[in-house]
Length: 554
Ligand code: ARG
Image (cartoon, rainbow, N blue to C red):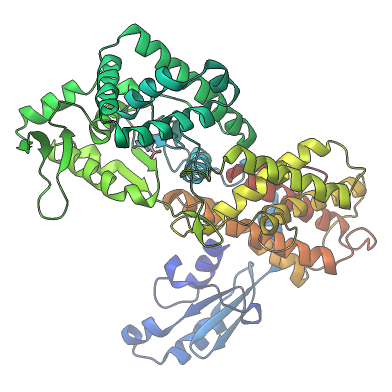
């Protein structure tokens, strides 16, 4: 629409009109678009008021219904009929593909996401990473990139030596099989407790990790089993969330790929010794990056350096994205800086997408001793609550289980994605499951409502439009904003733009639904049904981009 407005203004303006000069007025009484004439005043040596009057008087374009000059602004009202048609037509023709673009030109974007740690609970932070990363992948795909979702499992490091030791001393196979994460975590906690008074345990732990690094079969077999059991438990969460990955190459995968990186660092003269450890000095701005401990052990950063270079070689990415909490910002700054010092210009294509914490009653939902919040239980509770709501409101609904799952999970996803990710978010299940307000279920209900109208109207509809009322017009203006919302969300790697867009569209639709008699009033019926159809298409696609499902009936 904006393009048409720019064209129309061009025919009447003494100066070239750029799209950015045209604004959307706050109130619809002031038109659909407005051109402020203040910046032109200087060049034209005329008052803005006069310029606006002259432009308004000579605008003549089939897409413009009227132009008014008000205090130095040209306010433009669009010809609603033709605008409506030009908005609805592509949506009906393209369906879910509406808003798709070739912005990414098929470039690969790797997304490091989720990445939980073996033998540790899947934390709220891992949930955020999974949910935000998944939506970013969907957005990138819609905008013509090839996303590669990488689950960089935390399956390596000295803690595994401790875990092996603890299991050999106190572990039981049945317990690990019954509840892997809980059992392994207990062992880990016990190790730390006992090591406080018995330092020899720490030595045993180190020796066990050394054995693991050297590929000693017993140690390796045990570690593999811990990993499989943990992954099984994580998989249940991914199944509930509906998230899949293209790669599960985690930290252990890089065990034998770090040496070349350390050699390259050495070769380029970047390694310095500090208290027996090898570090890369990063100047005044940042603490040095630790590459090897004094006992020769590699670190988290060493593995990430190996992984980053490996991803460049394997995928030749145009963007390498890491969706990891705020608390690791320094780590990613160091990682990028080291790669830059190594002379890799692709280091500039690395983006860390940090996010805040999930809070419960203002406090971090933690996985520390004694109060482990198991994510799977949280998800199941949400589904259970959603089911209770269905039983109360619509007990005869078909596929109750399926709908409850979509709504329970959708509620959690949406409450996470609707705010800009850098904010901490308060976790309140009851609130996020409400069907009013800015919630996932509100959007899903709006979608189902649109489908219900379409089902009831099957085969109905007159021809043509007599007029486009304000409720209808609001929907039209929202619908045409979708491609731009997708573009912005992709460029800014920010799903909350789509979440907010979906709320605006659903609100416009619901006031239309509440004020216009779509089914009983035969006037304009086919136009109105097309409108409803377009809402259902665009709303459903918005939800899909957030990783949410849209049940047809609720
Ligand atoms: N496993 C890590 C953690 O739970 C997150 C890994 C993030 N990705 C990375 N490439 N460092 O804290």
